[in-house]
Image 1 (cartoon, rainbow, N blue to C red):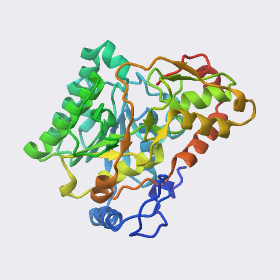
Image 2 (cartoon, helix red, strand yellow):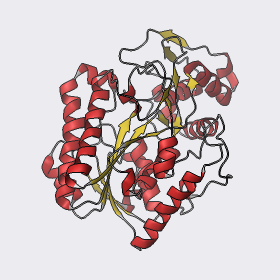
Image 3 (cartoon, rainbow, N blue to C red):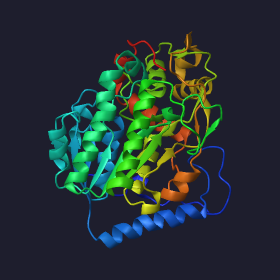
Image 4 (cartoon, rainbow, N blue to C red):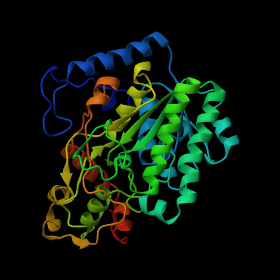
Length: 377
């Protein structure tokens, strides 16, 4: 049975009105957060019932956490996933609690069937690999852009109320500004980034033209339990963690000075739940979902190595040339998401690393398999 008191459902116990701290998940909140969160709570209360929600890509890393988050608050969930990167094991212990459609967003008929009878869609299904998009931009465009358009059309036809799209910080590309604010002009550096930006634009257009309540969330380097270190799309944290737990040296592409806004997955669950209830003034736009705190890859490696402990303390990373299409620095301003959605991260990087490493310690099969891979980003 799912525990109802999930961490992302709790009101953070901080004092409003003070300046945020330098480490995400630990700072106090502004008054805007309380207003937005109270709006979301009031919207649920006035609705008087739970939602029926479609999650595309629900068997993936982020999707499997969202399925649990929605079920925990009493919503009905339908998952659409073709399992090209999603894993059945991510959902196996809750398989009886949701409806599963094993199919592909590239099929418009499938999207129509998936949207029938649901009130909200959270669209995560994508090929989230920059290298893959460079290698095969046509195929990745079919999934990331055409698949999104198929789903938007199906949602409009089915009378879906709310459509939440998973976008990416990649849309900012090599913007020279260190802090990425939503008002910056996008400068995508890869086909993947172009595809996410195009899908965002479609979401905005469907709100303005057809009245479909669409909203986009720009994710910044999400990490946490159930992230597959064997995947070609795997992020750096699960690869660092599993290699060190196995006693082997991870690879850092580039000099390691590049920075990222690493964001624990629980924060993303919270952002999506808030986006489902956001007021209409927030619709049609994309919002940064991160921690608002930059960490270099070398600093991240140090933190993970310290947390793993033991023999890992003596392991030095291997450096390789930087990957094409990679940006140097990525740091989110989350002020807009805080004001419009009520989003504030509740789990910081340090706690997230601890929770993630503890999970991989309990999953030795993942550690051993990952050690055979060449390191990612």
